[in-house]
Amino acid sequence: MSVKDRFFLDRDKALLVVVDVQEKLCLAMDHKVLHRLTRNIGILLETAAELKLPVLVTEQYVKGLGATLTELKEKALAAPCFEKMAFSCCGSPEFVEAVRATGRTQVIVTGMETHVCVLQTVIELRDAGFEVHLVKDAVMSRSKQNWQTAVEAMCLTGAVPTCTESAMFQLLKVAGTEEFKKLSKLVR
Image 1 (cartoon, rainbow, N blue to C red):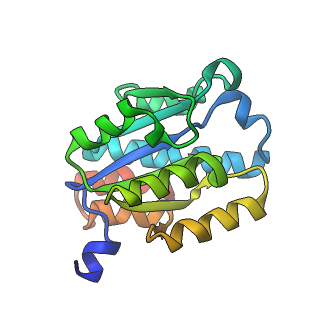
Image 2 (tube, rainbow, N blue to C red):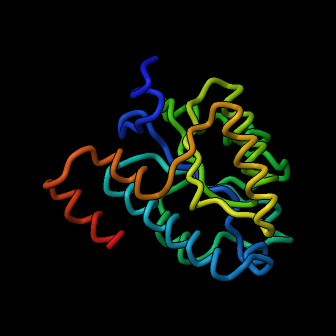
């Protein structure tokens, strides 16, 4: 695999996963960081919709943590949502089956909490042979130290660290298209 193949996202190979951005869990988060997270995940959801990338959403123990934030749910109406009890999304056989059914090999990961559900999901996706692109400005934990430790651990597994704008522009590849004109407005 070339360096470019490893580090560049390809719209024909990528899918987006949004892990557990749920109402009650969000109440425990730093509001400034949460605002940035939801904005960035929103941008990625709009990018996925425009470029026709598959999107999968998960929710951890909905009875206790509530549903996915409404503002994100509205941008992912067509996306299947998987309720889970395991911390790793891969603990849900339905989620794993849905990932495999897409035929995609690159998984763009966003969500919370970075050091629990995101970390365990990334490790299991990497172990299953997927290229994982970890969107650092679209994952969060209650504590910055937990976020940092988990990001470092995921990078050690071979996950590619990225940010919202890098992911979006890699998927777009070129300027001047109608897709570019529509999506680039999201980051101005």
